[in-house]
Length: 249
Length: 260
Image (cartoon, rainbow over all chains, first blue to last red):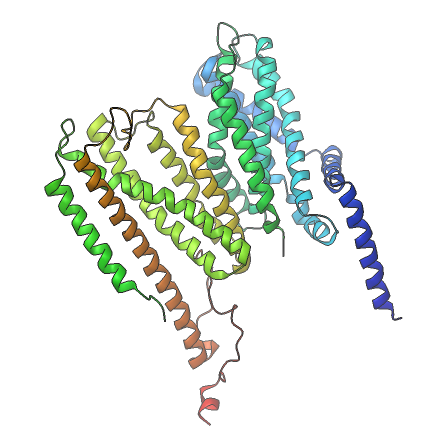
């Protein structure tokens, strides 16, 4: 048997075995890709420190721009959510850069795995980055700008940020993949992502407003929880459905 | 042969629009509060409705393109979104004029329909820059379709969110409570919707026919005069048609060869 044929058979056999393995544990490729992204970020921190510095600088800018030492209520909610949104744009811009520059796309396409694995891994990575940024940024916000005590707001804020991060991660991953192979990548990301994220921002800002009220945290308005959760669900499913088309070349 | 049925469609749109304007000016009653300026409603609201439906339609056509991989769906999706953008600008301008006349401001933030209309405009305004920044025509079509699907689904979601965010002052056109239209106005309004929808369809058909004709002409020139006579394609936001799709055996490139 000639050498190329043998190689072909061997690769077909290994592909079959791998796809069986991935069918048995469908999340495994995603987890491997996620681990790679987290490892990259740990070895050479890039996105997270930049997003963090950007957030804190933006709080300082808001302090001077608004001319206030303390904010509360809707204003506080707006400052926090808009800052996080803009910081997320930085992360979205960088999300696929290593894939694009080091041939990670080819690796995923050649591997016998579902392409959606890349989407899940990248969205999860962005979610983790945002959560890391928020741990410090929200604390900084509470110290620098927030008037009322942050402690009663904390459980509600945790829920809001989880939902908001999901929205940012899902839409951000899709927009990032959309923009990474265009000529004007850093222009396309903000102009496409910001309008798409407007409903999520409205819901998150309205949700957070009663938490930062002067008299102590009020209950969360359920209407906005439903809107934000619906947004996550719709765009999550949509992105899951269309992401494949961004990869095939 | 392109543009089949264009003449009939043109006539229908012309008649419908003329009828609408005649009805608006001579038949529909004058609004008790707002007077004459209220008549802009018969342009503004149908344009807005047609725009939003067109965006959703653009998303559906894009989904068909992703499913079938046929270039013509991308062309249709592109043209529908393109014309819808123009209608969107018209809707924003007429809306602002109406807001100025009835509420005294050019822009009203507690007006969910106007605000979400602006957000949708901002989103779809990025469609062309996105296309323009991708050179490979096949990838351009694919990425633009992905964008159009997302944006098409975004339209209703955005409307729900913005409407929930504001206390509404916009007259609900078919409101069941006190905001309902008198029957005469409702009739004229329905005719206006049909007319504007016909105008939209007409513009789309013309644009598609024009694009196909241009590409056909290009292919013919290339076949007749040789590929040197046809200028190479520049970067474009519009979908590329024809040439890569049909690798049919061409006539000899050289005219002298063809004559012998």
